[in-house]
Length: 127
Image (tube, rainbow, N blue to C red; front, side, top):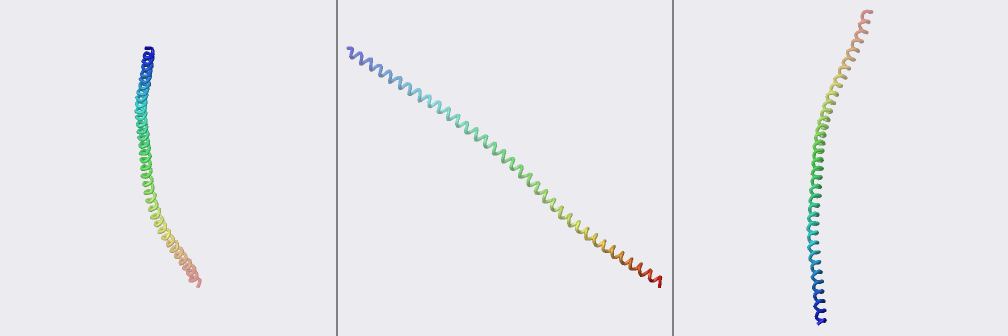
């Protein structure tokens, strides 16, 4: 009977040890699942947050680029209008320079003719 008792006690110990091992396996599997789930959820949330922040930053940069582009277009428009004004002012200045040159030539012509007339007038009186 002692053999039977020792076999029974060995069998009980074996099954008890097997039960504890299976319990540890189940508990560790559940813990791994829970840790994995929360880890994946945290990873997914972190990924979503990073993506959202990245998209916000990109949108902000796109808005800034658009704003700068509009300012550049306005400046280019102003520069073009200033160039047109400069060209028209150059035409006006050239026209006035031509007129002044013509007036100067007429004045010189008048002065020369009056000098000639004065010189001839004095000769006439002496003759």
